[in-house]
Length: 265
Image (cartoon, rainbow, N blue to C red; front, side, top):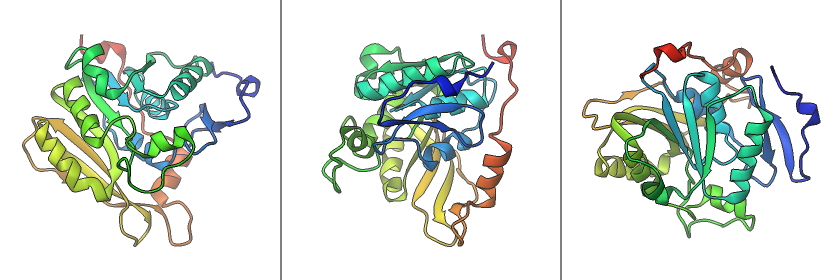
C-alpha cells in the first residue's frame, strides 16, 4: 500500500520529490544536496543477478540510491552509510515515509571507520556517488551539507575504493559515478585494491559535447577486458532529455523479478 504523501510534515528547507521512473517520493533538502541525475543514472547502470543479496551505499545522503536499487530488485538488503547526522536523520525519515519498502537500513558511520564496525567481505555489491572534488580544490560552499556532498571532507576517493574492497568478497562488484577528470586516478586505486574494471559508460551533458561523468563497474580480482557501453547524452541539442532518459522516466526503471527463494542461502 502506497503512503499518503500529502500528510508528510516537512521543514522549511525541505521538499517532497517524486523520483522519476518510479511511484515513490523522498524528502530532499533544498540546500544543494538533493539528488541529481548522476544518482539516477548510477542506479540504472547497476546490473543485478540472484547472487546479489547484500548491497552497501557509501555516502548515502538522503537514501536516493538505496531506495532506487531496492525498487529495482526487491530481494536485496541495502545498507547506506552516511557520516553527516542531518543527512542520516533524513534517510531514516524517508524509511518511515515509505513503509512499502523493507530491507533498507542506514548507519551513521564515516566510511573510513567501516573496518572497525563491519565484518569484512559481507556485501555482494557496493555503490557510491562520492564527492567529486578534492579537499582544497574549487570554491567550498558555506552550507555544510553541500560542501560535504561535493568535496572530500569525510574521505577521499581512495578511501571509498578501499572501503569497497574491504566490504566485498571475491567477485564482488563496485559501481561508482565520478567526474571524467578523475578516471585515471580511480583506475590506480582499483589496481591498488585488487579491482578490475569490467564495465563503463560515459555520460555527456548534451549530445555532441564532451563527457563530464563516467559510470564504472569494477569487480574484485577481475582480470579480463572491460566493456564500454555506448556513450549516453543527458540532454539533446534542444535541451530536451535524451530518448534514453525519456524512456526511463516514462516507462520506469528496469526491475528484476528475483524472489526470496532464488537468493543465496
